[in-house]
Length: 123
Image (cartoon, rainbow, N blue to C red; front, side, top):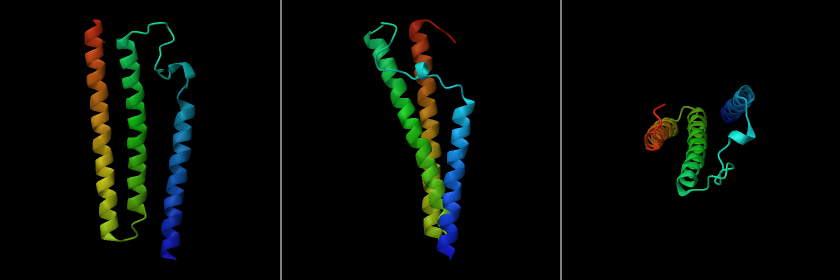
């Protein structure tokens, strides 16, 4: 019975996360033209534009992976069911995911600062 309860709580957490992410996706005015492409549509096909778009795509993919890892850690923690070892593994996973998200955010900020400084923009 305890396993069923932990499974149902984990399932409800997953469904809640899915519903919340769907609501966020609807709240954001998603435009298919705003997704970075590896080959720019404006005809600017220089190496700098290609590398800039490549970095954008990699940062998006890594961010998605980090958030999924955070959700996985939350599910691990919830499904521990009082087992201290499993709960500890869940906490470590959550901590590592948060550290990863902070590193990704720092990389994004450094990349934007460097690309803006290289192009003469200071915004």
